[in-house]
Amino acid sequence: MRKFAMWLATAILMVGALTSRSKADDSLQGEWQAKFQSRGDSACLDLEMRRSSWGHHSSWGETFKLNEFSGLDPSLATANDSPAHFELRRDAGTFTFDGRFHNGEGNGTFRFAPSSDYVQGMKALGYTGISLEQLFSLASHDVSRQLVKDISDLGYRDLSLDELITFRIHGVSPEFISAMRPLLPTNPSSDELVTMRIHGVSPEFTKEMKSVLQKDFTVDQLVTFRIHGVSPEFVRDVRDHLGKGVTADELVTFRIHGVSPEFIKSVDTLLGQNISADELVTFRIHGVSPEFVDQMHQLVSKNLSPEELVTFRIHGVSPEFVKEMKGVGYDQISPDQLVTMRIHGVDAAFVKEVREHGYKNPSIDDLIELRIHGYSRRSSL
Image (cartoon, rainbow, N blue to C red; front, side, top):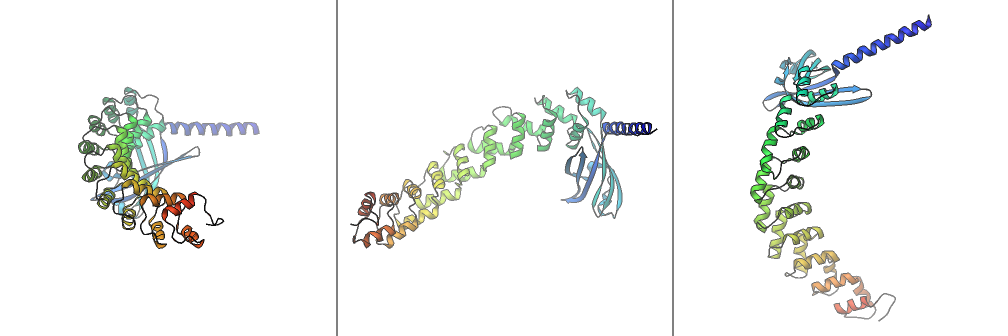
């Protein structure tokens, strides 16, 4: 009898499991929460759906206009604990929501039922064996049959379902593809289309860059412009100072190293000349700022070349160093001497040390020679 009871219990569990699986094959269930929001002059609903399956949790959310739903009463936005039943109908299937709203916020359960017409239509487009989970994702992101057909007609016929969903997530629409293709040297790949949308390479941006620089650009170049902030405005501002000879690569390098139009103007004004693109980048790499240039002009010479200024920074000839040397009596030191002093370690402390050992008025060249030939505290003059 116990064996029969155990067998019966097992049979009931198996039937229950089969029944649950059968239902799962027809639809998917989960939980939802939502909040009414105002977007400009229209009311919207921020909706999030959550599902759990075999220990895995997933969620998906979007903001919808109220007219995208069927049966959603706008008065629920101000309702006090009212029941709700509404639907979101997509080409791939229908989401049915049941729950309650209170003070503009709601929650409950949902059920997704796929469309058999959609499944057959996708087969005709070359997509067979679509799982229920895939149908759920296709419906969530509103991948319609018309969208798939339009994209296919534009030459993108072998996209996977994941790629179609990625197109929808990032806004790669047939309109975007049609607008971008004439602006590029070659037809972009599916990955390039997504990359352009991620980084904000729009048809308008592409047209402006082509116009201001008078040349065509590849997807990689356009994406690089967006990543580093090379905008049409930036190009025009830089060219106002350097002329039209500035290349696209130089413009990107400017942005990477912080060569702004303001920096160019300040440096040009201080030096009384237009310095080259390479010199501007070198200034930024080595920290030759307008402030540094101005200080060194006052302390050393008004006629310092860009190369001398960079050499100062490389070898540590700072305004503080020059002031210290002036403080120990050396008012006139040439740029070459300043650099040589730093290379060999001649500073104010060394000057004082030498003087303490009886050398009262050593010249700059004397100090450098003493350093070169190994003078130290342990040696005497």
